[in-house]
Amino acid sequence: MMILSGDPPRSRALTLLLIVIVAALLATPWLFPGAKALNVAAKICIFAALVASYDLLLGYTGSVSFAHTMFYGIGSYAVAIALYSMGPNWAAVATGIVVGLPLAMLLALAIGLFSLRVEAIFFAMITLAVASAFMVLASQLSWLTGGEDGRSFQLPELLRPGTVFISKKAFGFEVNGRTLTYYLVFAASAAMILLLLRVVNSPFGRVLQAIRENRFRAEALGYRTVFHLTYANCIAATVAASAGVLNALWLRYAGPDTSLSFSIMLDILLMVVIGGMGTTYGAIVGAAIFILAQNYLQALMGTASRAAADAGLPLVPGLLHPDRWLLWLGLLFIASVYFFPTGVVGRLRGKPSAK
Amino acid sequence: MTPLETAKPQHVQPMSITLETQDLTIRFGGHVAVNRVSCTFRPGELTAIVGPNGAGKTTYFNLISGQLRPSDGRILFEGKDITPLTAPLRTRAGLGRAFQLTNLFPNLSVEENVRLAVQAAHHVHYDMLRPWMIRRDLIERAGALLDKVALRGRRTAAASALSHGDQRKLEVALMMALEPKVFMFDEPTAGMSIDEVPVVLNLIEQLKQDKSKIILLVEHKMDVVRSLADRIIVLHNGQLVADGKPADVIASPIVQEAYLGVAPGRSAA
Image 1 (cartoon, helix red, strand yellow):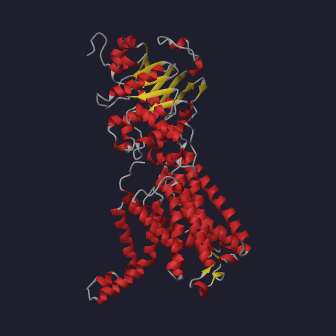
Image 2 (tube, one colour):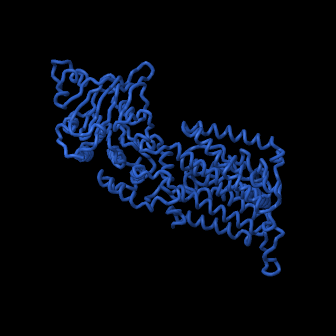
Image 3 (spheres, helix red, strand yellow):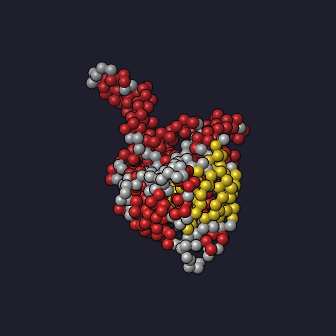
């Protein structure tokens, strides 16, 4: 239990769901052949960590930040630029991490100390402004960032798909650099989520919840809440930047669309809400549901549409036409927020029970 | 600390442990809510602050505990000027406050509410890499406090699920958890049912046994004031209009007029 920091899922259904998700992620390279399945699985891992770090802010402290993708982008770009300019070696990866993570943390510190003193809306506005400025900066400084095209780069030898550890001939499956990269992403994401779970269940984490519940009272108890909020902001930013590093390493690319855009920010928000705010586990569930829907709903609808057409049903094939998948995705999210206002995890856990 | 006489503790106590407001004033626009209030509070003395609604009693409390900044005047505590300190720093200096309008962490459990206060008192602010449950000391202390206010049976309930009276008791438990040098009760029994009131009054009575504490009590019920207070000060329109022993203050014409709304000469109901 200590690895979960004394905060187990507390629901049989949730435990089962989490085991299924984690087992499926672990087994993806063996169970589901093909690049797409592995890409989806890696994206779920990375977003689970990213969303969990956002949950630390939104769910646990109640502060709304629009700069989370900025920190994600800082991590992505740092490692991409380092690998692009220094060549595909481990020193470049290390440089990207050593530059990217502290940069994200310092920026979060500055934003926090500047804006978390006052009302929450001010923090939201400042993060929005800084994130917008950063996005413009990233596309303008094209000599550094590659502008709208972003930066593609090569990974160190060990992580390349061409590096085969176990050939297909020997065992019937192949273990190559790509597989290794995937497990690197999986392990790093898992470590970050467990770290966040520890933070939210520490005495410090309880103070964050107290601030969310009643900041005035937390101050009256002697907590200087601006520091708690700022530290939380720094932790969230650092984890987001780490997730960004993984994202860049997995894609072998960093650009505005994959690591900075506001549509990613919206995705993160949706995943937090679908999974369940202030639960950490919600990040895993939310990321899994959202990314699976995003990637497979269209194909699923295509199959359903054809089946309906074959059965000769009127109207249904048109409604389920794959081109309308975004409509259904939207409806799915509206329904999930409407029926599970506390998210999937909140729903499965039921009433907050005795601790 | 030397043993004290209850009657005149101020003569024995060293001056340094006092709480003092000097010409404390706050203006909201043109309205002067607290007007040049100078008063010294001493350990071992329970001072009741009375006055009609809108007299500035709670505002005076807010100025002392730091929720409001004075327009003028100073607050001295243990001989130091604490006027520039923010609310959390004043709490850390030893000022404890229980609020009039219940002011809890509504979605956290009763025990968690108290534990947060205990944690603050033990200066566990930024411990973020250990789970809270390994701090057995904090958990046990919170349990002991819940026993004191007879709430242990409700410890797993959300604070918002408590009855009004229980919330008031939890409010008091939070202040006691801080182990302050100054206890500031703002109408601790307001809205409580008759059978709940003694729990809180007994707690205050127990606190009074510790002669090193300063206790301030804003209270409307005159019977409560009479039975607990060593001293009464009267605020009226933001000004301090009377200060003295309960019997004297209650009998004084100015109080009859200002607080009880009765002109001198006519008898109070």
